[in-house]
Every structure is written in structure tokens, then in C-alpha cells.
Image (cartoon, rainbow, N blue to C red; front, side, top):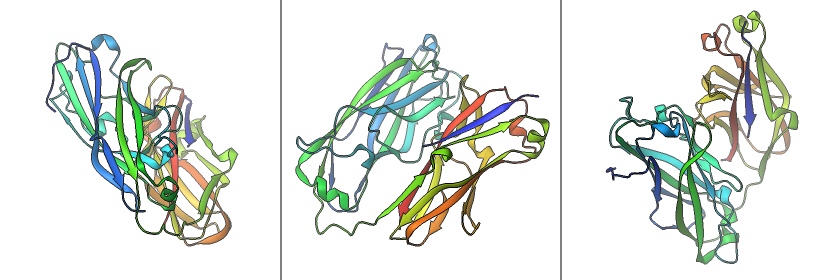
Length: 338
């Protein structure tokens, strides 16, 4: 009997290039926030990936990520990176890869939900994609287009400035071994000059119990495969808010991935959230890389606690004949005032 572990962590036109793997990126150069609603600049940034005879670069699987180089500053103030986000828009390509497969957001494993700019380290736009970039005796290229989102809110008043903030990013493409194959800088500026009085800031928050930040679902026996497994975490998280709100969840990737790059679809895992006091279930979803509501609430000034239940379906063939190893993924909880 195999033993399987599921581990979820909460938290255009082609231009010939002799390089086996190449990344180019560009942006229009400027974004201006004129009100406290924030801003979305559609198709703001483009990441251009080129591959020419890349079979020696271990590109059957690959990861595309980005990081912020230095502070986002206007010279005197530093803007918070987490208030900026990329969201995938669309892609184009010059044709199929060497396997004859045309790229799509789905088969490339693109993260389609908004991706916050990281304060530290890197953040993935694509993680361990199964769409092969191992190109043999041909040239392949694809454009990935991204919207830029600047969060709205009263906090913008603190960063009001006629002097532009400069954003320097580094786009990185790594192979299946995690080795850097190509990188490119991406630079643009933004101006924060919202007009009118700032809105009243809602006060709200969500906090996870330390023991609920990591979840382990373990298949040990034949009964586990036949009946499914589940894990209930009592008072997993709490919320407070002086305004109505929703809580949404999404995974960063469409699959749970093992250390040997085996995969399981995240939608094989179900999540239920319930009020810890009344035991009322507030939402049940199969995990997905798209945001889904699991909690809708009115205002409450004191903390309310919620349980989380992670489970798998009885007799789900998804888990049959899988290699005995740990499959991991990251689940993001987002609290949104209404």
C-alpha cells in the first residue's frame, strides 16, 4: 500500500536569438494614481520568453518568478511592495513547442489570480510548469501580458508625492533543477497623487493560529484511500472588522507538487470553514488557483473564531497508485472589506 502525504502551507513576432534561453521584459514606463480607488493598468507589462535549441538546458519543467530590486522609492519615501500586484491577462506565441502543443494559461500552469510584489525573496508567476520548453532544432517564443494593480485606500495619503516612485524588478526563468537560465530587468515609474479627502479607513484583520498554518493530510491505510482523509483545525483563524467583509481562498498553483516534481490536482482537496461558536458552515469549496468565497460576514468589533476542515473524497482515484511521497502547496486566505 502506497503512503501519500498532502502538505498545504497557508501563506509576438519572433526575433531570432542564438541564446538557448532568453527573457526580455518591458513596460510603458509610468502609472499614475489620481484617486483613492487605486489603479489597474491593463496589459501594463510584457514578459517575452524565447527558446532556441534548449534541449541541453533541462527545460521540460520550468519556473518563472520575479523579485523587487531595492526599495520602491521617490527618494524620500518607500512605497510598500505588497500594495502592487501583477495579474495575468493573456498570452501569444509563434506556434507550438517541440511536442506540437500550443501554449495556454492552463497547460502552462500560469497563476491567474493577483500576485503581490514580494518584499523579500521572489514570487512565482509560474511554478514547475509541465509545458515543455525543451525545444529541439527550432525557435519558440511566447509573450505573457500582465495587468498592474495598485491597491486603493486611505494609506495612499501617506505616499502622496509629485516625485515619481521608481520600481525595479528582476524577472527570472529557472529550469527543472532550479538553475537560473535567463533573467531580465523590468523598470517603470508611478506617481501617487490622489485627489480629494481620503476615505475612512476600515479596521479589519485576520490572524491564523500558529498550529493551523500548516496542514498535513496523510494516507496510511487502505481505509484511508477507500474512505478519504480529513483534518479539522479548531479555531484555525480569527477575524475582526468594523465593516462587512468576505474571506476568499486560492492556491498559488493548480497542483500539489512533490520534491521529485510529481503532481496532484489541488481540486482533489476540499476546504470547509465554519463558525467555531455556532458550528455553522460558512463555505465549502474544492481548492482552486482562482479565488473562492468561504466566508461572508457583517461587522463585529470583537474577534470571531473559525474552524477549517480539509478533506478528500472517499474512493477518489486521483490518489490511487501515486508514489509514496509528500505533495505540497500554498493556500492564500484574503480578507476583503465590503
